[in-house]
Image 1 (cartoon, rainbow, N blue to C red):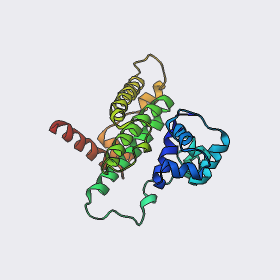
Image 2: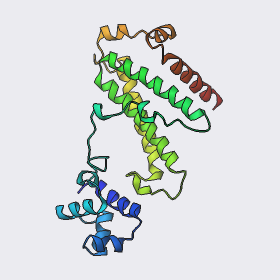
Image 3: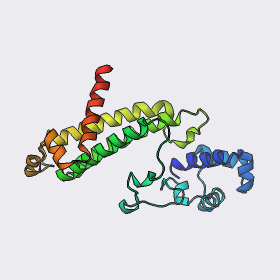
Image 4: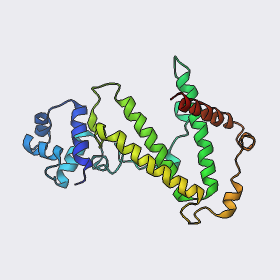
Length: 230
């Protein structure tokens, strides 16, 4: 059994707001055995996985950590909604700052991924994507910590280790991305003709991305201002 199973099994029980004793009774096992399952001390059989999935109304794939979706759905590119469509008719109330910054970041990312596509370098795309996902992960954990009652089993990596591990991973992904982008590894992962086409100026950005360029330019300005302030 993988390491996700004990964590998710515990999380589901705590989300339901029931004790181990109550859950064990519903699942037709002893509290001691359920405790061993939740701690990862013992492995369960397939029959228990199915029973627990039915009890908590999730898929076996979710329970086993094979899918982040409770239904067990595996998303394809076509299944993912556009960033703006998900929030149509649901504008943020109050401060305009969250909406403004969201647009700056979303529009800037559109440019970044378009440029990545032009490089035709899968390794560079993976490294940049991993770095960005790690950044979002770190900030989501910060926001998750606003309420101290939020269940910590939501995450696999303990809180005190998440930030240093994420930072280390981000440094590694950034180094990989820079090595690939600058051709420092000696490999021709980005073809010479692709590199020649990657001429980026403020004018070219404005011309090629008339709707998004201002967002990226403002994001750069805001970021460097934050660095100077620090």
